[in-house]
Image (tube, rainbow, N blue to C red):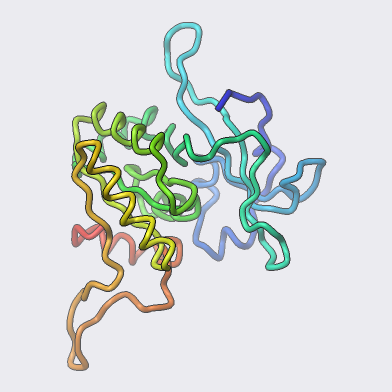
Length: 235
């Protein structure tokens, strides 16, 4: 995807949906997230997620560049749920990829833990960031492409790690997507495991305790729950 000059984020504001999801202003500023209330853009009245990357400038230094914006519906009647500009190829990008490339704290965390965490959607990435995660990117859907697999392999090689943890959604599409992603990433020489939504997390007098069935993805979890799962090396 080519670099663009348009930056919609300065035109956005915070939205109650972001508060409801537990996404702070600080996380929004870091990733480029906001609500576009008005204007001519086709993404108007949607939550905007900026898609960025790190590209070499004229001095040979890598800098953050904007590739596109996607809009997420805030009302049930808005279709589709996610809206992309025509000509943008989401299957060749990873949401949050510029953080891994440009932020040393993200690189240090990935090296320390030895893996990259891969989620489906931008809300999942944002919630993981809110919980202090930095070694995380999103595939903008439940289907991992060959291009994205190659990018993950390149990132892993650059970081001198060889493991990927998939945390796709709990629904059928997420499970099927994770199965295919494991096969594809393993073919690239990476070690892959998938987060098990059904795994028992403990036991009470009533029996095993696991993640409630109404929790369908990372963004449904609280920051404290996500941190608890990482503390037990599950995320």
